[in-house]
Image (cartoon, rainbow, N blue to C red; front, side, top):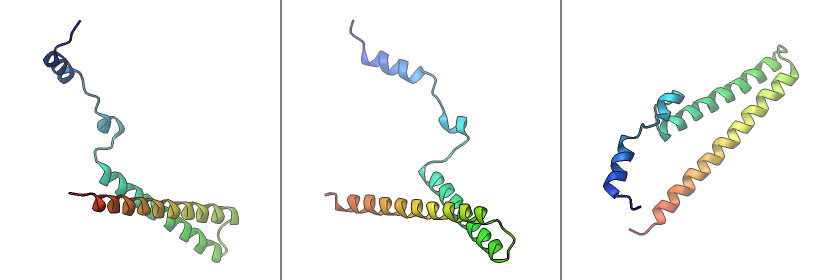
Length: 98
């Protein structure tokens, strides 16, 4: 049985669309995700700095300080890796022939 292209397109356009942005509460694109990720990275880094300051003042447990600093270090490594990938992608785009 042959399927008419127009019929297939009509059926596709009438099918209910899953709106994942409203289901997850995320209404933005890549830029919004990147912005939120960088904001979270800054918060994690500040938490590590605060833990180190509290440790220097003798008000924090050593395990909490090590955990916070480790989280901040992991976050920094992730941000650096992301930056490297973005720069690499930009360089690949610039090398493309027009």
